Image (cartoon, rainbow, N blue to C red; front, side, top):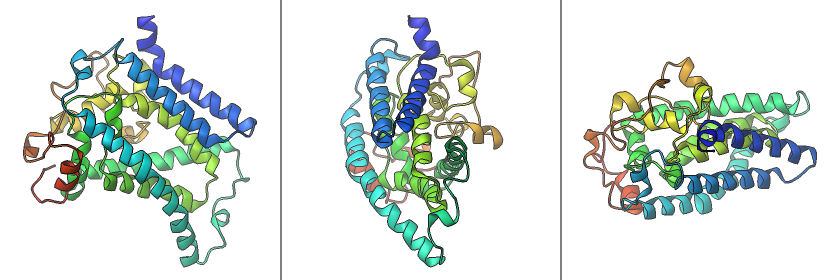
Amino acid sequence: MYTFLTRHLLLLILTCSVFTFYVGHLNQWNLELVVLGTTSLTLAIALLLERRIPFDPNWNKSQGDTTTDLTSAFVLIALVDPFLKFLSPIVVVAVYSLLNLAGPNSIIDPASLPLIIHIIVVTLLVELGRYWSHRLHHVLAPLWRLHAMHHSSRRLYAINNLRFHPLNYGLNFGVSVLPVMILGFPPEALLGYLAISQPILMLQHANLNLNSGWLNYVFSTNELHRWHHSNSAEEANSNYGNAIVLWDHVFNTFRYEADSINSPRTVGLFASDQNYPEKMGYFKQLCSSFKPGCCAT
């Protein structure tokens, strides 16, 4: 069972998520609730299995960071995400009014192509936006001051997937999801993308000893993402993909060592980020992002 889980957990969960979305679409279920349900279930499974098949048992021990991660998760889920969902339709209407267009369907006709094609195109576009947003957050100093919060943890476990500066989170949304909405893709296409991406993201930071094999060349697995959280810039400036790594292959930022355990020596901030208050809690980290010199790329 141990070997089976380590090799096939990602594929099993991803398959279940996509199949549930497909069944929900056929039966006209509330697809937003379907995606929320599979996402929550994946997170619960990850938290349970971290105790059974941890990659690093020491990462299961709190380092005074649990409160920071839970606070960030609450802020994103309860405040930031609902605000973006409220604001984005207003922005879409404003853009169409500014450009004197009739409405979203004047650009993309939902009936023009099968839903699966819309989902594929949305996946490619959202992932492209997320890729470049993520990469620029590593390259540009003002953006790195926001993104440093996400890298400030010295361990990887399921909950710190949700440790993000709200502005970093909002910028990611603005260059990936918002353009898709402006182009007028049907909401089902975006939810289809989420049915694919959310299970991957819930496992991406999980402290699980997975060996996903060929899936590492397609999806942004926890094996790949450990490299991205290295405290060595040479290792960390790689694997920027959100849920898939297509654009990492295209832009030559893919890193994976098939014959190793894919683990950097240490995860966390770079040595040049010594002024970052990584042990001072969520709100101290939040405010530090606006202070020049808090951190460096």
